Image (cartoon, rainbow, N blue to C red; front, side, top):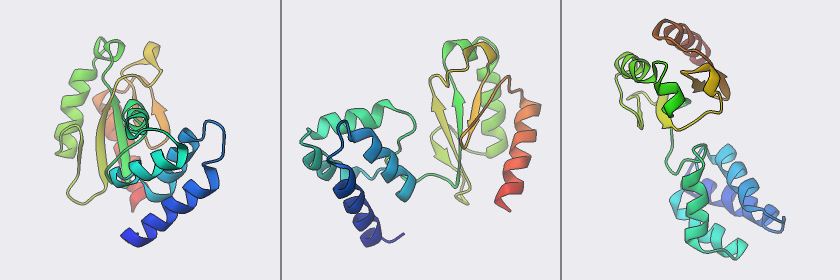
Length: 158
């Protein structure tokens, strides 16, 4: 998507949804869905369109781990690093995942296929360690289970 198309898409979304009561979250979700992320450059326009401060818009974007301000890989893997998951092996799983992907947390593979993100709670505390791949949350993920899930992910990308 070119910068001009991205800009036009964001302007259209803002124009259509800015009149909704509590429209910030629907606007951010729609921008993320259409563009793949919420560009930092769009924050002042979103704020102006909703009569909010840039700090308020930025605060919402940075609070929710689903919103990104940079393009990510075609697939997103989120590893829960909250205490409940850490207590049942999330740190060892993190070491395995970073070794398998060859990237660290907050990075994207060189081919742009996968981004690895750290999140603090996927709401699956009793079944950790938990990983979200795309929109699916996976429970009790071991290194072997991650390798299996990664195999499915690679097959989908082919």
